[in-house]
Image (cartoon, rainbow, N blue to C red; front, side, top):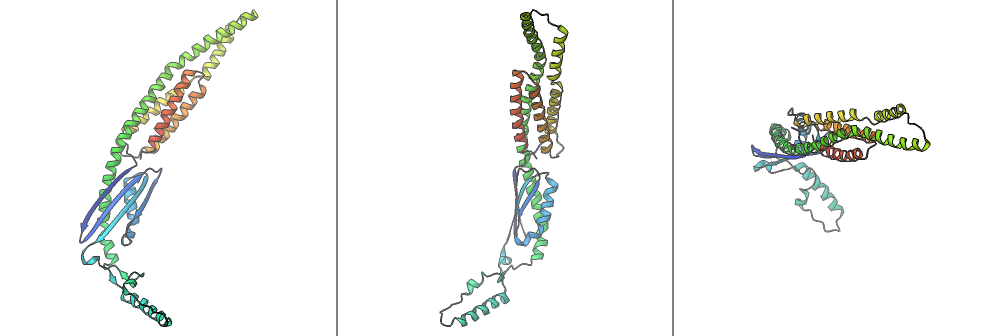
Length: 297
């Protein structure tokens, strides 16, 4: 069954005093693209996270967000005494130069300066602890994302089948109309030529008339285009019904392009108003199919 490219999945857990949360979102894209938002402590997992998603998804634009919250005493930051004293010494020197000015130093403001506050946990140890947990949550969130994409894919499949069925009905109507076009052309041409020849008091050469009709029939023959259109629609249905789990969006898009090409050829060959109207309706349906296919993975 085909899958949509839009979806959402999340997962969360708490282990050893650390709370982890992962959110995955996906949108339409012709290719695979992943954008990650991770805490500074987990930036080393970015490549592994993207690789894990690549193994499960064929294409789409993915947004992965990982949140980390350390609870308990480990959540408190440590004061870097050396950095704080360096800032304080520099400020005291500046204060001595401004002896005429009333200057006060607020230590609480110094805590916001770069490098003064540092995590209370070892970054490498936290990364090692978080790696299996985060990748497990990515797998769990990915499963939820796939489930949502499958549900939306089922709705897409229903819509695409309905559009393809309407298109096939038009193809069969054109196929039924096509033979009559040549007969009507023969009748009209015979009547017109007969009328002109009667005015000139000449006799119609039936052989020449049949040759002209044969040329028209060959030029207006759309049987090959109709056969290819039926074949494309049959393959279209097989792909939609397939349960092999392989991404089908690009193949369906290619088939839609080929359907449009055959419809254009039929329109250019046709010299019949009824068939031309059918072609307009067919191209409108194919445009809708192409639009929907852009949502398929």
